[in-house]
Length: 236
Image (cartoon, rainbow, N blue to C red; front, top):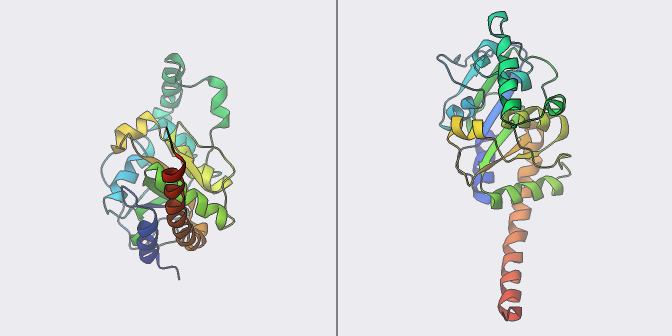
């Protein structure tokens, strides 16, 4: 059995993150022994913030109805009385030139609607996560990306932009992805302007963690090497 707590500690020692990594699991049924989310949040990515703060809980599709875009990426159909919100949201984005209509078809989506979505900090996950979200500075993202390559688990997509929530289905379909975030996510989660996300499939994380320790050691040696060359060769 994977020791997720130990993995969080190992990865954090190599590639510091600014928030606790969040484990997201897309489930076919509601989990036993886990609290159901109660209350309201404006977006699906708002649940990431709660999990990073240490809460473990699960949502059901109706908990995601406040975000038409997040419901779309999670393959969740809005209730009949709220179905028009997807069209209204997209029309707003088209009107302000945030996104072009032809781009919508290319937004990654989950292949099927989850019965429940479980959120927790990585160390606290009670199940195998579908995806782990790391919130970090670019230097840590660099190390994570290099580690995925060393582990033979490279992603197939360039850095992603809006909407941020598409990083979850994109990681499941294409491997590790980097997301630069979007304005909605940054507002709803309070994400720093210095931070971005790296989303790694849960099944890949143990091998990536092993590779990360090797990559971090190599980067430490290369730092000394590069600093020496800079001191000797920089004359301007």
